[in-house]
Each structure stands twice: as structure tokens, then as C-alpha cells.
Image (cartoon, rainbow, N blue to C red):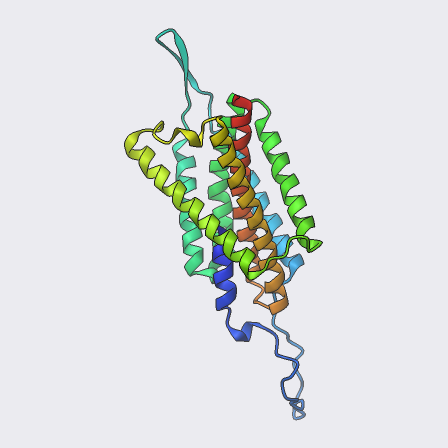
Length: 276
């Protein structure tokens, strides 16, 4: 489930009392019969969200290292005179994947629990990410560094384009990106069901190094990159609206989900390019 969809819904449903009072509010004289409290509600800030994102990435990387270490080498067997590589992902990695997906859906309905759900997602998804990265690295030497570098480069470019207002997140832009993202997620879900019942080769173009397969990966990676702009917009607007400080975890979670998705698409794209 793409994080921008969840972020936008949460931002639209944010109660009015999370925002600071309007400047036009009628003046109320201070209470003069006792001490005046200097307490102010803590609000979401960009810097605070960056700090929470750093915490989540640390948890993700530590968990990914554990997933990498617990993933062994492939079994090599000979069939009909040809060597066949059988690679098994640890069961715990698959558990991490499905737990991560479940936590995304849970956060959609319980955004106030982001402080607890986001770290759990980083740990669960990180283990799977480490295991799948080890598998790709086994067959394509150096691909993990390339995918990570490409992901960082895309993130930097999107941040620059957003801050320079070259990319403007308008209502139309938001609608197009969210619709495309939901369409991709539904498509992936249908393909998963088809492969589950008809075999892994039933939807071969998803992993095929053909022009169609490469073109599809480029398209999906591009949409994932556009989702970064939606995440930046949510964090900026949430800060200006004065959302509760707990939403820093929510913004960091959304950013983490998008970056993980982008990294996975980069892995798949690079693997296709190197298989040609």
C-alpha cells in the first residue's frame, strides 16, 4: 500500500484543533488572578520528522544486516546437463514482508499509533530487504551498491526539484500519482495470485529482461519517485498546519515506505538490464 494515499487521507481528516489558532481570532485578555502558563502544545516540524526518519533508517539497516547474515548461498543441482540454482529465502524474511504490509494497513486506520508501528515496520521490512538483497547480490555482483546509489540519487534529485518548485504538488498531480500507484499495487496483487496458482512463469514479463519488462520497471520506478514528492508535500503541509508532534513518526513512516519501494524497483530494473 503506497504511503502517500495514507498520508493524504490523514492530513484531510486532521482535526481542526491540531492546527494553531487563526490570526483573526478575537482577542482574549490574559487571566490576571494567577500565574500564566507558558506551556505550548508540541507541533510537527520538518527537522523533527528528519530525526524520526533517521531513527527508522537505522532500525531498517540493522534489521537488513541480520536478514543478510541469515540468508545462505543457493543450492546448485544439475538437471539435464545444466546447472540449476535453487535459492531459498528464510521463512522469517517472508514473515517480515507480510508483517510489514499488515502494519501499513493498520496504520491507515490507527495513525496515532505511528510511534509504535513505524519502528516495528522498519524492523520487519528490513529483515526481508536484507534477505532479498543478498539473493540479488549472489547472482549480480555489486548490484546492491548500484541500487542503493541509484535510490539515493533519485531521492536527491526529487528533493531538489521539490524544493526548487520545479515539481509542484497540485491537486491534479496528487490525484494522478495516487491513482497510478493504486493501479500498480492492484496489478502486483493480481499477478501474485496468478503466479500462486499458475506458477512463477505465468507472468514472466515482470522479471524478463525484454524491452517490455524493462519499460515496465522504468515506469514503476518513475511513479515511486513521484511518490517522494507527495511525501515531501505531506511533511511540509503537516508542519505548516501545526499537526501534533506524533505525526512526525507518521511522516517518517511514509517516507520510509516509499524509499523501500523505490529501492526494490531499482534492484529489479538493474537485474533486468544486467541480464540482457
